[in-house]
Length: 195
Image (cartoon, rainbow, N blue to C red; front, side, top):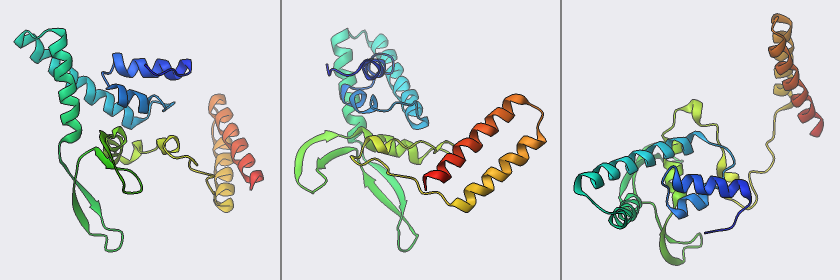
């Protein structure tokens, strides 16, 4: 078992024991410090897969060892299954169907590697099917060396947001909301000073 810091170890064991992720999946997704909407959806899918296996195991009277073997087989077939993904061509804007599975056979330089499944392909697939209001998560900073870098904001737009927040403070009587708006103004002002 990998040795991590305590919080990451807790996330790792929770993904293994409670949500029935494979060790490789748990290793990758324990890097995420927040419970992103895509990860929540993946947990739901994995619990449903496990419940299906348990029902089948109880019907057929499988032992613990047989159950574990079947689970490994199901995880492997889950990643090897060919899926059709619809993407849009950058130049023409037309949709293209792409046949894909989630097994990595080449590294980023195109050199062949020992085939292994990529949990991030599953993550990206779930993320692309989320509704727009849940696409706020950005776990890719954990996947790349440089992270996402600085986010550049438009100064004019930031000043407009500050003015809108000041009008909202004037229009509300709730002290909690006023405090929240003032905190947002403070954060926006500090982002303006950094530029």
